[in-house]
Every structure is written in C-alpha cells, then in structure tokens.
Image (tube, rainbow, N blue to C red):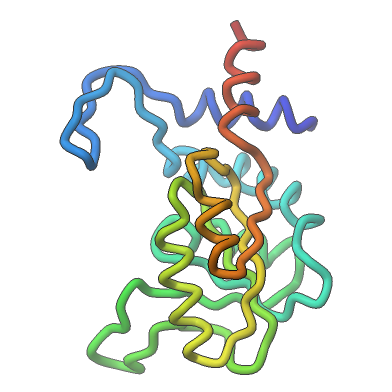
Length: 178
C-alpha cells in the first residue's frame, strides 16, 4: 500500500461531518477522530508496518503516551520487536505508582510514540518526565503531524519529530479521493 493510499484510508476512517464542540469551546462541522484509525486493527497494523522503518537505529524502548499513543506503540512493538513502555500523564497513586509502566526506561534510548501531534505539548511534558526517570530521549515518532507548530516546539526541547504522514498528506489524499 502506498503512502497516499494509507493517507486516504486514514482520512476515510477518521474524517467526520456533523456538529462538534471542540476543546476550545468552538463548534465545527468537521472533525478528525483519530481513535477511528487506532480502533481498526487492520488499518493500525498497516500504519505501524509503515512506521517501523522510521524507528531510529539504536532505539531500545518504544514509549507510548496516554491515551492515543498506547495502541500505536503496542502495534509498532509487534513490528519492531522492541519492548514498550506506557507513559501516563500522572503516576497513579496506588499499585506500582509508576509514571512509565512496562519496559524499564532508565539509562535506555527511548523513542516517544504518539498518534497525532498538534502543538507537541504533551510530548514535551512526557519527555521531561521520561528524562527525569533516566531515559535518553532525542526523537518522537507520530502517525500524523498536523503541522501546527509541534515540530518547532519539540525542536526547542532537543526532540526531533519524525512522522509517517502530515496534515498536507491527508488533504492531498482527500482531494484525490474526490
């Protein structure tokens, strides 16, 4: 499957029309529901198959961010054979009380994995937390870069952004689908 075909499938699965209230409080008639591509096992498998070659050599652990990065990192781990960590926004106050569950990140080269990057804010916060646990984080990998400043925000924190697709790719795919 080509990158354009994949972008078309993601757009078809995730682009919704109707009345939607956005986080900002504004309303919109179009909405991109990323959980639609994450919840489709066949589509998610193809996405992560194409993401696997983007994983930098030397990566020791894949770290998926709560919540959308978790299914992506799990499927990506299947394609790469790399162990996965699941990074919470806040450590739970019971059980292990860990911020990063699964694979140990201390002293290891960790690739942060996210579904969609807009501003990059959550990656910046989670990377700081991972670095505080001793992880070496220099890159993040996402399915879609919305091209709304995330790459620049991450670069300012010493994090390079790798993406399978961009918002422009999705627009091109939608236009090609007619």
